[in-house]
Image (cartoon, rainbow over all chains, first blue to last red; front, side):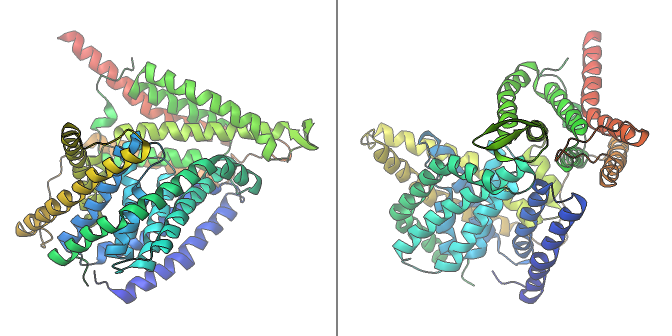
Length: 234
Length: 299
């Protein structure tokens, strides 16, 4: 994917250094520093926006669009078909592997769209923008570190998988606290973390296991598609 | 009245109207911690849920929500020690009445947002969602519509492969790791199949001129007069209520001491406006139901 780079950079900078601080200021002034739940939802949405706009402005081919759509659908299907095995959700792993093969932008899109689409099945809610941002960010991070590596460093990859699980859990806990208290309180955050720790551990472990076992076969398939059909080669 | 089977007004109104209404109402609910506003939103969200889902579903979800509300209200003093009215001390920490009441209304606010979203999920079908965003974000909307096509297709294929593998006796043990291994083998075959297939779809799209300039698309959602009227009504009401909330007439403090409710003319008008706005959805459905039963009785 090639982009209008300069324009895009200015937009991202504006978004991250002007729009988001303005939103926070709005929260302080208009809501007397109290209603951060709504502010945080807006911020999570704004943070996703530059990636989506970049994708809209790019001249991504129909093949590239459809490959991202397929990977996202696979991540969602993974979440649904593995439902019988508690705690084992391959979404994060599929997002990370997609990012390794196709780059950070494809990773962000796959991650955030997986959240949006799987919530069509599990129910949308105020948490949707958070999940979109969290999974998108994990994809982006993986793309930054591993892009184009035929054989990614397994230990580093597992570490990223574990961190991915932890990031996802910690970010969703922030949302829980904001939703209840309106503002961020450390004591509530610690309680939220402690109640979600078992899930976090299970989730991170399943990410690590999935990545350790299945990165190679899936990555081979994706790289084959990449070479055979010339997608994401730019 | 109610019931899940009769006609729904909001199913037939224009997606833009329905989307703006629900998002507006959800935002207003989250804007404020004013107990009266939250109470209004809570009641209206439940009545709308009742109209869309019927009594059984509503009662069932309320039975789940009520304990949650009570637990949040009772545990909030454990986290927040602000407030003047100390009820008792626990581990040298004051448990205050204010914190408990705040917890109650925070929980009610959350539950009302959940109920509005429940209605949103019922009304906002994926075709409407894609119609709404297809103009603004064509590529992402196209991607979204493809995903929504792929997901059931992939699940079907997954089941087909899964069952044939089971029939062939390839599934080895019944332990957790064995299950994962077998499921992964199916997923792996699904990945190859789906990627190859989807590339074919992409080429076919390209051959038919996808992305060329000047292509139009067909819309199944007519912009009726009733939609225009309803949209302007919702727009005006949402703006009035939001501005009213911003001007601080409905400000409410829980700490250190709970504000006394003011019953002056402006706050009361504001509550009334909020009620009218949030109750409109229920009224529309009641009206539609009555019309439905009336027409049915004539057959």
